[in-house]
Amino acid sequence: MVRSGLRHVCIGVERNDDEDLVGWGKKFYSHSQSVRTFDLLKRKYPEVFRQATFIVGLRNETRESLRRQLDFARRIDADYPAFHPATPFPAPRSGRRPRPRDGWRSRTSTSTTCPRRS
Image (cartoon, rainbow, N blue to C red; front, side, top):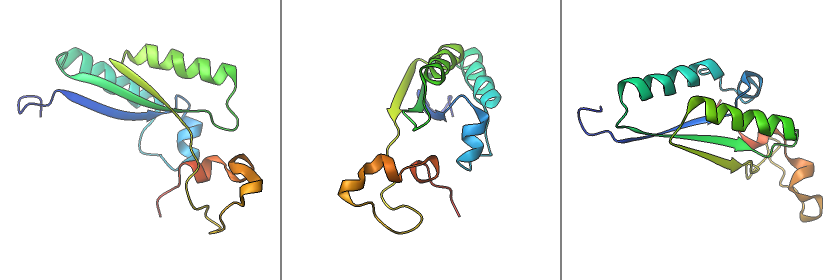
């Protein structure tokens, strides 16, 4: 693909913890796989711009978990690490929409933030 003109890749790394990825049903990649992918791109294809996207602001996010996200972004050495706040999926699995007075936090969890595919 690089010989055909690929110049920019955007990879959804999402989180640095495998537990978060598995909880979201993303069993097809892992922390170590992201490290290997970015290392390979940097070594073999330095001309390709490497962008990584991360999800932050989960209900259980702490200063320490956010620090680990930032450290991981530095470790993979992406050209552009992008941090996106978690946002609720529009329709919870129950099919019920939260009432305005409930607020999104009372109805949101990682399973509705990043829904699993059936």
